[in-house]
Image 1 (cartoon, helix red, strand yellow):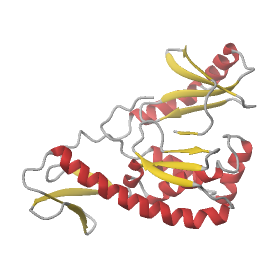
Image 2: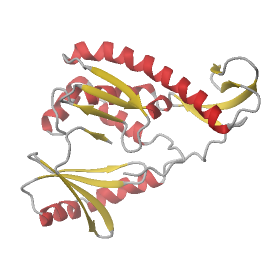
Image 3: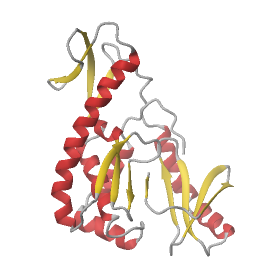
Image 4: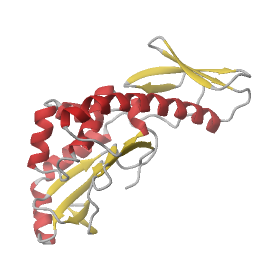
Length: 247
C-alpha cells in the first residue's frame, strides 16, 4: 500500500498457486506483504537474493499469507454507488444514509446529525455529477484534516515536507517521494476513521527519516505511535469500495 523507493526490477512467480510479485531493490532485507483489497502478495527482495531464496521465504510464510488473504476476502464490500436516497456512504469511519435534494442553488453536501448525509444537487443531475459533488466535499474534508495533522506531527518528528497532495489511488493509501520530500494521500481516507488517516500521515513522514521498511523504521513508528499496528488493522478492515483495484 505504501511505496517509496522505485523498484529496479519486477517479476511475477507462482508459489503453491499464489501469484507473487517480486520487486528487486537495493535493500538489505527481504520484506513480504499481503495487501488489500484482493490479497495481493508482494515481496521486496535485495538484489543479491536468488529467486529460489525468495520462493522459500514465501513458502515459509504460506500459512500467514493465506490467513491474510482470507481476511481481505471476508471484508464487507459496498455495491456500486448509484447516488440515490437511502444509500450508505462513509465519512470518517461512520456510515451515513444519503438524502438527495434537487434544487436550483449551488451543489453542496452537509451532514445531518450522526445518521444522514444531505446531497444538494441541481434537478436532473446525473450519477456522475452527484458523485463529483460528493468527491469535492470529501477532498475538502480530507485537506483540512491533513493540514492539522501535519501541523501537529512535523514538529514532533523533526521533519518538513516540501509539499503534499490528495489523489484517488488504486493501490495504496499513501506514498512518499523522499527525494522531493512530497507526500500523497489517498482520497478514500476521508471515509476511514480519523486515526487511520493519522497513521498514514505519520507513516509517510517517518519515511523522510528512514526510507525503507526496516527495523529502524519500525522502531520509529513504535516510538512515536505505539498503537500503529492496531490502526493499520483498523484501516485494512474498513469496508471496501465496489472497485476491483488493480496493481
